[in-house]
Length: 292
Image (spheres, rainbow, N blue to C red):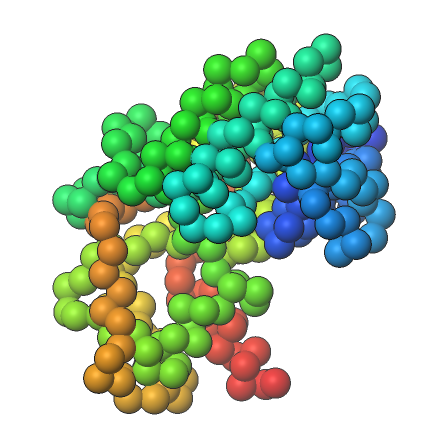
């Protein structure tokens, strides 16, 4: 996918510019966009990103900090702690504070980075953007509230629901298998994932569509093309690299929910995956480890 010409000179705010947001910002810069990165500590922003030092959960730190004439806002915040309060602060209050400060501006598009955790399905069936969202976890419930806040705002909004991210900077699952700390039972829950490079490229693709004036849906599910049971992924990794025998106290990897995430709507926009299934992504990670 070529970098879209439409992004040149676009003024784009990354609200929350950590690992994922920073990678998105880097590609946006390469496309010729003017990128602003908002986070509590801006000393680790990618070179070329205009820093905005503020805490979205503390509205007083946002006062008069936002640049004018923004074309797009990408909300990409993560919780500072895994509690209901932490998730509410990150996904709901932070967004409310940002929208309040954006009053008077009319960006063309607000992107809200969400999660497939908003689904509560546990029947091994397919889910897509039209499926019911009834999460049982507090994390999914708060993320869903954030989605609703974005879609109810005065800015045209698009929610992007990512499944489990993995890649060079997210290798905890792979390391757990190699170390023998993960040993799911046969016929375990379905898992869904997306390589972090494809997650960044998907955001670039949708951002370019917005900049071109193309019609966007209010929600896209971003997950690779091959949902698969967790035990099958683990077995494949063990077959392709040296792993410790599973420890007696190894985690089984079980969690609430088992579903197959459909990316059909995203594919219909013309997006193409670089890593269409887990094999493509993990094979590259394993090869890189062997060559290190």
